[in-house]
Image 1: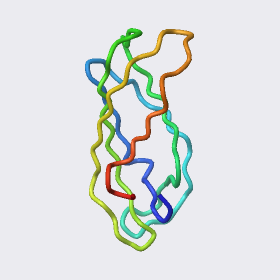
Image 2: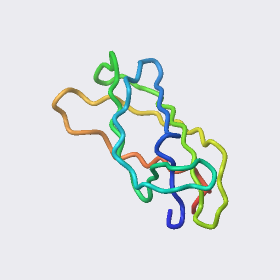
Image 3: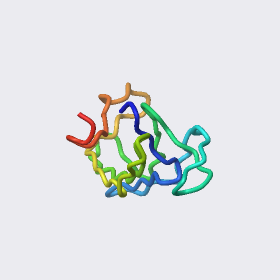
Image 4: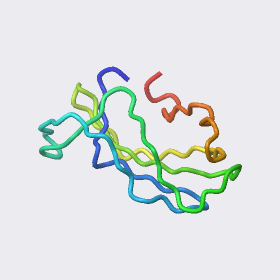
Length: 108
């Protein structure tokens, strides 16, 4: 949402029942933060691709994502755990539907 940002180094991902390999996150904007020092941050949408081990097509996964960020107004929020249920697409198939991982009620 406008006026908010996420810390790149505070993003963490896991999945059930499969393993998530290390995620190659896109570079963020450099910022000197009064709470965490020199950091990279994201504003707006961020696309993250999760490399999964043994994720069979058609299999349902629960992806857990942890994030943390602040508002430009100086208010930071605690770590924010979220979870999404997804179905793994078949190899070579079109990706599944877009999933927005915005916490309900936080910015709307």
